[in-house]
Image 1 (cartoon, rainbow, N blue to C red):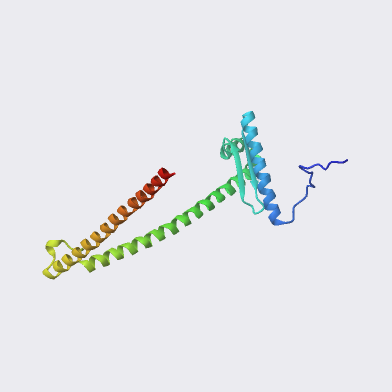
Image 2 (image 1 turned 45 degrees about the vertical axis):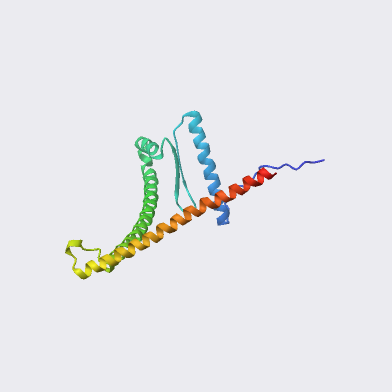
Length: 192
């Protein structure tokens, strides 16, 4: 009886036409290449740098100890390849600048959102101060403003008292319900 073998199959090496499959294959192969290079550097103590450009032209790098030090080391030794290394370094710089610009845009959007919220809060505080007369020192207020302030402080005190009473009631109800449940459980256990 003939057994079917499972596992890796040898594939024909040719360009992949489907763009989705191409991206998936690129990602997997790039990861494998970087992993193998990392293992080589760890096991042998070698210095290595890999630069891979995606089908869209985005550079991906791996280097031990780092890509720039290795590029600089070899660019100083071989002047005839400086143009290629300069192009690679320029592509890396452009990619880094693109990433930093994207982060900056996100931070600016967040800042604008925070500033709008701050302006809304400032406006609300100003409206409250104007409504209740809290914007001026007490010794500068007239009789009408003092009466208005007195009424608003009494309203505030009533609201605070109500809120505190609600908190006390909620605080008292929650433990008493728990003690009722625990005492009923205890009595059931004693009966059994």
